Picture (cartoon, rainbow, N blue to C red):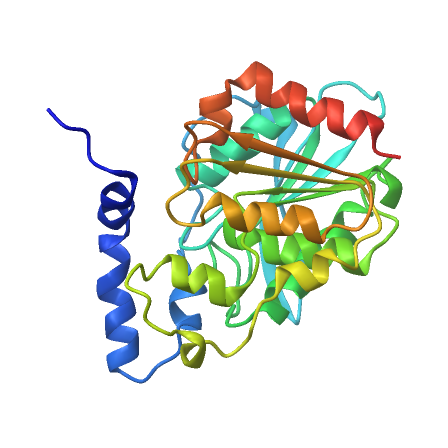
Length: 286
């Protein structure tokens, strides 16, 4: 039996996206409504409990007058460690399978982790309808983290996955004192991201309110940068990760993961190798 080509697999994976995109276009709405689609819940039901209750605390803080919800995941003991602020992808909330397992993987690598929901996501109030609100929410998460014992700006790492790459990079660009920036499965700009979701070459610029040019923000970063991307990512092709890497002006690393798609980089690499990659990178980030 012949194996389907990569283009056939890509088109199949994106079929679910074509219908809502067509609907958005037909209704003369903006593609932003699809990009910033949220997943609201009245309470968080965590998909797994790798982290003990005593080390996992639900927290709240304010952004733009709205209350945001998150989880503060602490390592045991009082030894100093780095803190990762984790900005997750679209259409989910922090307790959804991919974001929560990502947060657990980051915690298991030895970091304290602040995972949070943007406005209108999960239990957080308000509405996220552009990159400005996402960036402001990431800044609010940083402000909260800095109120915690032992947390200083130079010991904080900004981590973004998928659409979360936008607030994560914006946070890094606006706070040069951060320890490092890690982007996983990130996009180069809104146009490229939208076009990757429409494999028929349909122009989509007119559907976007904002350009969301991550490469321009990446060019303003001043800390070490690690870009991780699956080579079989069908939603945001790895070439966009390469573009982010090329835009970073200083110390940087690029890790393309063979066989990995958009959400399974940690699983494809294996938890030990994934943790080692992150720890080795931040240990040299000064």
